Amino acid sequence: MTQIAKNKIFAKLENFREYLKYLKQISKEVSSQKKFISDFYLFGSVERYLQLCIQIVIDVGHLIIIDKGLKRPEDNYEMVSLLYSQKIISKKTADNITCMIGLRNLLVHEYGQIDRKIIYKVLKDNVGDLEIYYSEIVKIL
Image 1 (cartoon, rainbow, N blue to C red):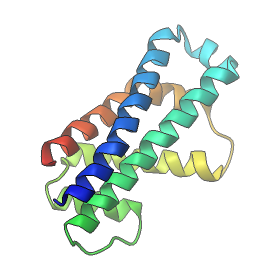
Image 2 (image 1 turned 45 degrees about the horizontal axis):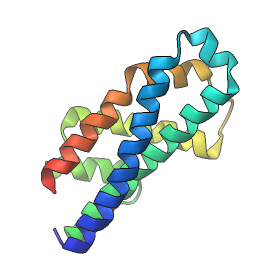
Image 3 (image 1 turned 180 degrees about the vertical axis):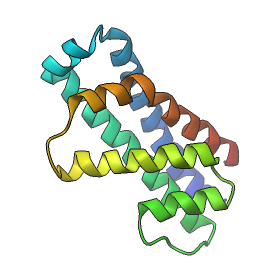
Image 4 (image 1 turned 90 degrees about the horizontal axis):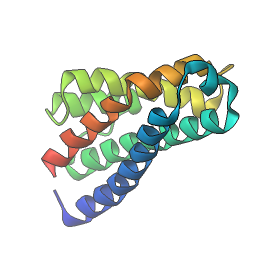
């Protein structure tokens, strides 16, 4: 991997770690789903940090693909499949990230009403998936 690509990826991952730290802190502080759903500050913060994290996942994936000279994927889902096929990320991580990309699309494009219960569940159950992605990417750098 070129040093330029590594530098770009590490810069993105530095932000990624910061956003993950915020999400983990919020998760510790939220005492209940009811409180989360009724507090627009909490919900808005989590929504935004998830969106930023997932966007970094996408950006890093594309940077790796470009640096390796691989065929450019048609979309972000294909990008995840390509990372998996190249053994850059595990099958479980690929599946989890694919779901996260769907969530990001919902957050960014507002296809409909965002279900705060789903965002709460992601906060409580899936932030660890982002940490696993991070560790898998750092291993290849």
